[in-house]
Length: 379
Image 1 (cartoon, rainbow, N blue to C red):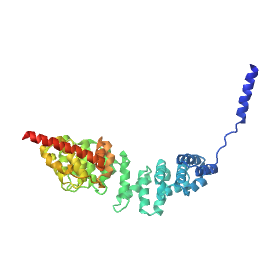
Image 2: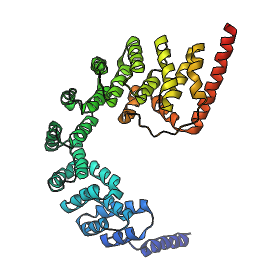
Image 3: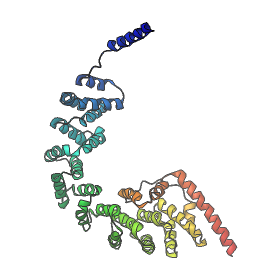
Image 4: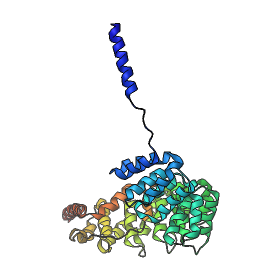
């Protein structure tokens, strides 16, 4: 028995001693492995491994930025999230500004350690006067918590003639930081950037901010985006009466285009009144955009009013019309979740497909048949 135990012990010891210790990979071998592999995820993992080697990785990391394959350049970006130096930081910023193939990856890498790149971005601002490059840079500066970067961003915001004023203010608002609240609200009178302040207030404000939204909606001329956020504020904080009044006004306003009326219908379609019914009827018959016509027609269904037969005839007899029309409230999509009405976006998207239109049209045909039967019974 002792003989067998000794034999087993010797075999285990021999097996352990025969194994070679793991060889640490050097920068050159990792660089070659990155170029060799055909898998993007493996390139990214190897890139991070390369970056962890520290200063010895720098020459290989910089070479990867010049690779023909943008997958290899993505590996360089991965490495840059683990190793930082003036040369590497500068090259990552350059990649973000100039290499559109890896722009998303570069931006993500910079934002993950934004404060490390502020000085480099400021230097690039002075040397790179291309408008698109500066738009990218001012966005990063405004996102930063660096005091000098914020001061720089605010100088651009205060310059009414700056090409970068809007994006700087939009980015500042998107941070939703309480310390910026007073400054953001101070721009409500500046109509070229007011939409971003309204969006910020809608997402972070209080019921007392309803007055701001009502004041905006009371203006004779209002920009589409301002209307969208202000009406969203009434949906969020308004009383039943206030919501019904603003909805009716929106439907009746001849200056509002179809997109704003469509938005209003989807937002407040549960409201019923004779003025609302009449307005919906007009939209279903005369709106230029088919999306608005079909949505208005559907909003008429719950009224079950035989007067609506004439209102629905156009939509049930027309063919599907594809439309690339914008709805005038692109950024407003982000606030639907805030309002708890994600169905708004879904409702708008439904207007885009032929199959969905035909199905909805068929339901409206059935409703007309119901109304005709009801009208016959009433005679």
